[in-house]
Length: 447
Ligand code: COA
View 1 (cartoon, rainbow, N blue to C red):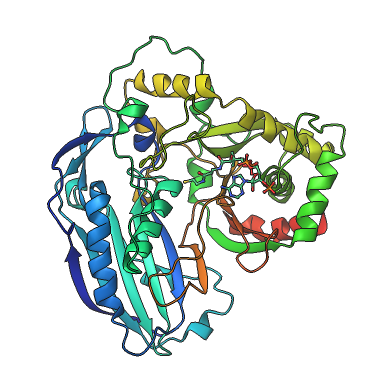
View 2: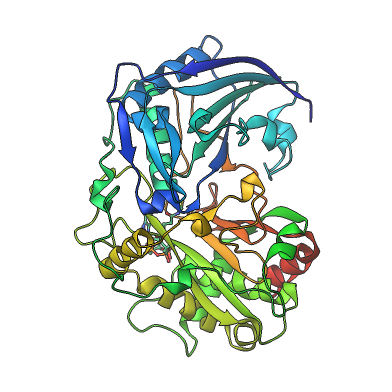
């Protein structure tokens, strides 16, 4: 791939003055991944006289007027807590060029090249100086484009990030705002002290997932080299897995298993086989759950922030491998099922009661070895299956490819819908180099 040459960097502010002041964040904003999440969108060449840079910059500025928290900055509070300063500081928009051609990206499998297509965050800077959103437009020799977006997970979850991006695209096409963001995080009790001590449910499972047998911490596992793969399962394979789980003795008579549950069960088992665990090795599977519709009443439409929480399904490698697929899938179903309004409110309470939030914060991107680790012997499978990730048109046509930027954390995986083939899924998986080939073998041969 040819090098990426940076041409300009503009600072984009909200188009009109917005509210300024300190916005309290919720507990969920401040735990889990609090660094940035990169995504890339590739486009074919726009029409000859379409001014892409000006269109994107001016629509971004108008979008930031509605979503002004993204134009602000974070600041640390005592006890590893964070607050958002809404100060309209703005966001960087980088314009770049490359002699590469779109066709050179093949099937767009993640490559180190992606790092040059998404603006990188310098976490050595004080947090007050770090933008919450960074955008880069790269123009290729063929006229094709890549829009790289890096957005702070301390401010938005996937649903809210995509809400913002799709409204930006609507504005760029000259359409009015579709759904206004609901910015008041007090609905999830942001900034309030704990109401109940101790919280109603005991949620010790939130602390640290299992370690390798014999290890006292996960430092060694974190050091191992990792690699990323995009693994497709076509619709027939997905249905085969789902049917096998639904027909097993572990089926759930109340509701059949979903694509997510069936494929994730298969991923969990394949990882256990590939990692060659002892049968008695405990292992956790992390599921990221959107609480929006699980709360009573549901969160208002357009709630803008983090409304997701992580739960784990726990088993041993031996049980997962020796039982049929339905066993793993049922474990995942049970972990998801327990998340109701009471669970959600208890978790908020539980986090509010914590003296310090540091141990719940994943600062892997900053080289930290603390915080939750879903690498060996564990795994996290985040569903993007129901997120509106495709069809982003800023005025010159929809993307030809959308995908996650680089992610390099052992056990970190995403399940995406295949944009060309409804019913098929793509697993974006990061594993230790030593386990990836064995994983692929089990993933495809044991269907
Ligand atoms: N659009 C299209 N289909 C939808 C949908 C939507 N908005 N919402 C639900 N469905 C479909 C699902 O695709 C699934 O059908 P399938 O089995 O054919 O795929 C069915 O309805 C049930 O979906 P759901 O109740 O969401 O269960 P699930 O097992 O697919 O997923 C969770 C379980 C916990 C992952 C999911 O409920 C969830 O919370 N997802 C959000 C994850 C998220 O926020 N990711 C980003 C993190 S930053």
